[in-house]
Image (cartoon, rainbow, N blue to C red; front, top):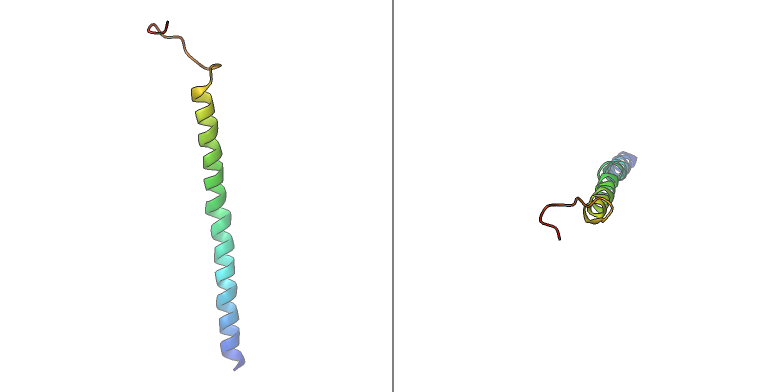
Length: 57
């Protein structure tokens, strides 16, 4: 009886470790990607970095 309980505990522990590893590896990169996109948009739409063109009045 203790053998199947150990197997279940091992699978639960493996699932928890896999979930934590997934969150650590992939979700943190998505958040930093969103920060990168936000900074890029801020630079592209900022007047500070605007280039004067010949078609501009």
